Length: 366
Image 1 (cartoon, one colour):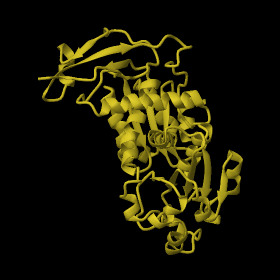
Image 2 (cartoon, rainbow, N blue to C red):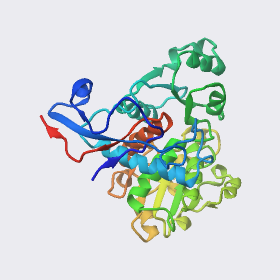
Image 3 (cartoon, rainbow, N blue to C red):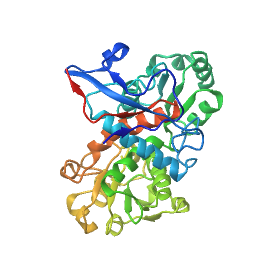
Image 4 (spheres, rainbow, N blue to C red):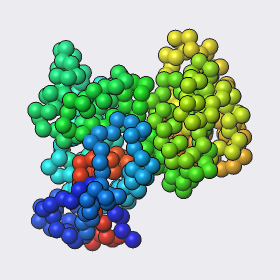
């Protein structure tokens, strides 16, 4: 069996059946491995399912179902690459990726950084707190600086909704939205869908419940778009002050009663509750929220079937989800972190036109 990584465009300069461990590739092998054989897979033009047509990824509403499935399929191949002894692939050697995080982030930034480095790209981290941004530089000025540096791909996280779209309009480089305000977080939704697909097999006829602060959640919005496109039935649950009625326009059901939403659910996703919501008067108390909306083992039993639990992280244990449930066998939270790297590898590879490879099942021991 081979892991096939789809290719967005043909890549020149490397032959088929290349062996890692020979010549310039020797440094890509970990200790104890002599060589791994690669067979290059090339796309066949714009009609090929491996061709990628988007310069940017700002949200998931612009993607077709087939394109979402392409990302998920590619992520499956990338995950196989991750579990092999190879630490890097030369697919994006010579490409540059800039990470611009205007909000604090550990998981997302580290996931993108690892994904790009494993693919062989050069990664530049912009330390926003120490950058010219704090000296008054505008986002447009920053865009012009990136353009002058000939960056190939920019990942941006920003507190302002629309920041990623603004940057994309002023850059020739591709832009990936790593989360903008309350608008969208497309790569989180893609990794959630990938994680669910691995365990559910598909989405048709599956019921997914999302519970928590829907009003302020870019994760919820992007997941609703992706899951409904893929055919899942989505139900949103949360307090009246945090569950806007207009979400129904996206083709989902809403309820203020979590326990009525749970029967028949195949998966339940708890959203992170920012603790300042209680201080701003949107919640009477955290104790009241946890009493009505915290996921527990007893509450999950109301689904009447085997149900998986997800959370985008970081967790507020004892508020959004009970510790024993977060650490249980039905929790996919740690898998979400691993799958985040695979999904972002797939997306970066597709957007930068990296080479596709089939890796032999076995690597030769040293």
